[in-house]
Image (cartoon, rainbow, N blue to C red; front, top):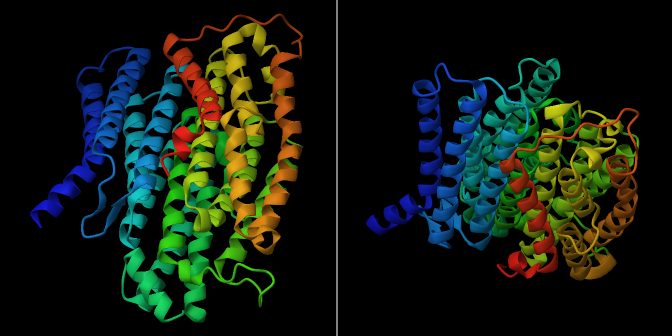
Length: 489
């Protein structure tokens, strides 16, 4: 037991560092920041938050794979370690958008909430029981609700927080009810134990209801249709750094959690996988339908958007369909392609929001027309924006192309068109070509359209410039050498 507690302490050390950092940030702002300028308080809070994230990342890297700890409550396998490092990195980039964007009141509390959300993400990535999965998910969600409505000067932010909170609360209740049914049916909260019981005792109608509730929560967390309605309003109304965190680290942790829950815990209820048999059943077909609906709705509705953030939201819904497709394929080929897609998508998305934050320092960046002449105002920001947008569009040799390629190939490799994932993969390929149109509209506005008045040069902070360049370089390197991530699996 002593060794087990020691391993559990090492496994939870990154979370402990982040919690301690959040408290230090608040205390430092209370003692040192009183009476100082808002810009100084923002910089100090962001610096302390980054130090905590760097320390947590170093600990995660040094500890490496620990296996199951806490009597199987946490599973620090390759996927968990990779996701935990990924969410820390994406949280760091989201935090840096505070430096580049408009400063806000109470920066210490904002940074502390972001760190608490990251703690929830870390728990989601490694949870191996229903209890820890729900606690991690709710810790992250409650923090994100507040972050979405943090800008009290804008009614849109309050609206975004309210819609996010109400729909998220319903989703949490549905998930908790589903978990209670699973516990009642199996007598266990561990994923592996649940799977063993379901193999020997196939669930009936009550088990189907429980699995359906879990799928509802999955759809809400990843913004998969028809549970996507919160995404456009939250992306549009939330502060830029909050939207970046919701669109990147939250999704990466969410897909990791539900991959583990659905395949490790509810794998026996996945149903048939061959269309030539009696027909697919279970949650595989349900997820395939949700993925197809997301691909169609997200990409087609994005074509009509003129608001930049709503365009990114519907684009995210389309990519959520790709993530759901990767979830289907992961049951057969492993989580490598799914992780690569989610991580590189998150990096490109947080980079775009970083560009939006920098643009908002000087002028409005609400509509596509507000990007006109961006290359004249800041060639660096325009060049980085081009890398991020082209990566989301799936243009080689950027990481977004290989993310889509490995997921589509994995889905087709299972059983070709005899598996529901094969048909969804064909639809995803077609929708990728559709998405290229609205992504190129963004680049057209930034690079080709001449604004009616001569643009003024943007003042880009050095830290923000380095962050954008690092994110863009990461997409190029991971696209040229995809084995850096795929080799982990």
